[in-house]
Length: 165
Length: 196
Image (cartoon, rainbow over all chains, first blue to last red; front, side, top):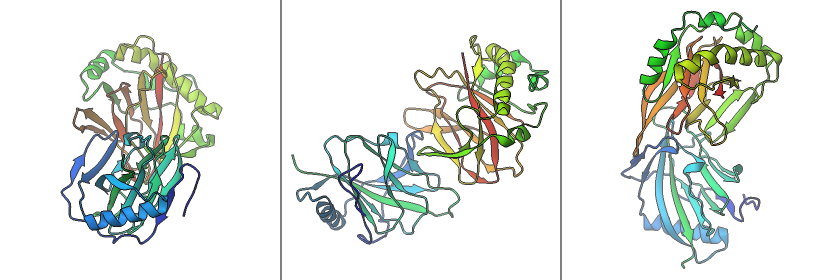
């Protein structure tokens, strides 16, 4: 799926990565008016190379390289709000790989332009979303309902890619 | 109708409530139980239309920001006129006068994530939540108050949404609170803010 309203690039590539959560030492983020989630560093060169290739192809920007990367895990009751997100005015590409062990209905990533959702990324293990982050684009990760069974987790690898200066 | 809440206020000890307000943690608030109107409010609200509202921090069913029916307008005005004189004394906010009010229905999966109600220019002085009897009492749906520190947001008090319970709390940058997700049943309430 590719759209041109809200961002020049907003694409979901299904079955792009193995849907398996990597082993990680998570740290809890606990400023609850911004977000509630676990985060961890990530360094798997093979997977990062694969994501870079996918992003370059989807965006048509062959010089993209990863400048920021982190792993985020949401359990039941977790979320990341839009005002916790950073604004980028240099048009980076954001890549999110869904490494969750199973689909979690309702657990989505929403990209917003001037507050309005223009692109929804549903929970689809193995899928990769590629979105250009313009200066008016923000992102939130929706609340994961406690109505899901115990043990439910959403694991997302989030990377920002830019051309070298 | 104007006297809708007068009986509920009989016996209010403003001095005791003021002491409770001042010492409440994590920020000023009071919880008053058995605050009963002289009419069935759920019945009066029968014709008030509700829609689903959804953003990154909430999903719930609610009436419009301004009442549609005469009934909700009357409840709002009776509530404000009955409570404002007491709240001026209890909270030491001498200019409290009017209130707005919406009807809320939280169903399973509905929530309102942690936030503070303060917004520049709106002049909200106090927030209130008044829980109504539900045909299907909810599990979850507690009002949770937080203590804010530089490194974390700490849960400080859980208030169950019991029928006829009135909660009033201060509006400031640090009065962080949430409505926990409703897990079953139906959570009915009237809520809004007091203004000068």
